[in-house]
Length: 92
Image (tube, rainbow, N blue to C red; front, side, top):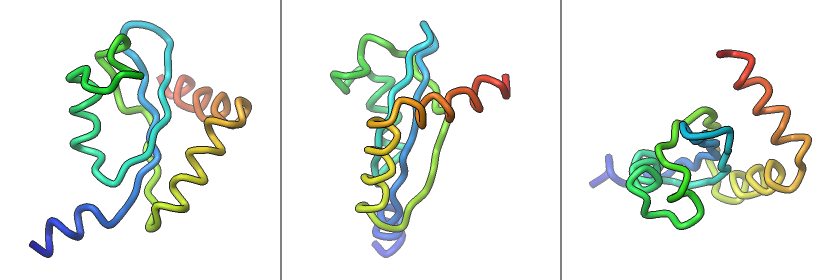
């Protein structure tokens, strides 16, 4: 049971890219593997029409509060989101 508890202790902010078009989604979770499966199984309303999706950015946080603040920063500041996306796209 300790392994399961440790698994959910860290939080992640992530960006998904639609493989169908140039569309990105920003989210946060403490169960990244399961969340990615939900997105690609079209169980998440905001991403279901953009699947399949690929994880293109992942940042780990120890506290949920810190992850939520960073997620809000990316979502709220278009320039911040575009900066991260440019880095992602330049790696291709």
